[in-house]
Image (cartoon, rainbow over all chains, first blue to last red; front, side, top):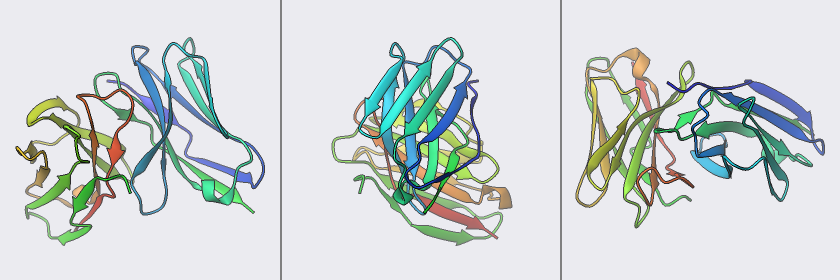
Length: 108
Length: 114
């Protein structure tokens, strides 16, 4: 089955950019997603990218997709303490596969 | 608030018992998905229903079963519970079958098996 991998932790200072990386194994996915999970809450869709795109920008969020390397990244510009959460990448080839989540810690 | 509701919020039970988790999708959503989130396994897709029919199956144990009712709410039944079943169980819904844009997640049910 599909394997989606992420690094577990990322720590940045407030105001810096955060880059969260994700690799996946199946290249047939139509869409790739980034979800955010705040403590004690469910997952919230942040953004998604269609598989024929290389980049998508949405306010402070930039998604980069490298299909050749099967690498997806989420860049958060001007990271705020409110961005502290767990970030999941996911793809939906037949079923939804989620990465293990990257815990982003933003230090004031 | 995603519009997806799950009950109960917390559930504490003993090994060997059976529990039922309930999910009400957003109004108008026909698909319901169940996920298990545990510390060691991460977030795993369990099963999906669309308009009452099973559509996709993930890593769901045989001790677990689910169904979607005519009013589109769904129940996840967990039986012969083991300590390792302790986890957060999320339900999500979407408008279409395997909606390619967005699943809306409920707040989850935290199951503790003692």
